Length: 70
Image (cartoon, rainbow, N blue to C red; front, side, top):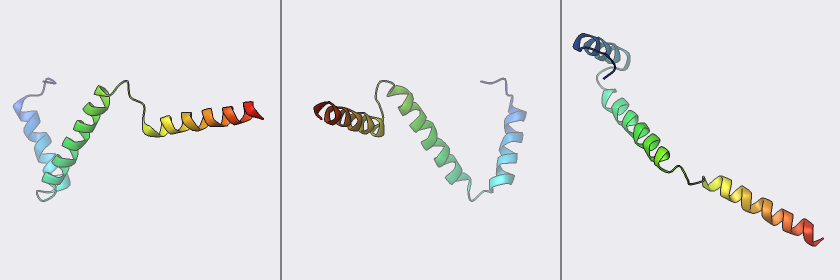
């Protein structure tokens, strides 16, 4: 994968257990999974603009139309 062997993975897992504790580990894993899922979804939606940008563009067009009519 990233050139990590079994020993390195075990050391990383032990460090994560010490930092977060066994009780928080499922929550950390779930949050990490959701983050990865959202990242992949964002990468697949490359052509879509966020709703906020669409609303800003619409408001600017309305303002331009009002200034042209005056």
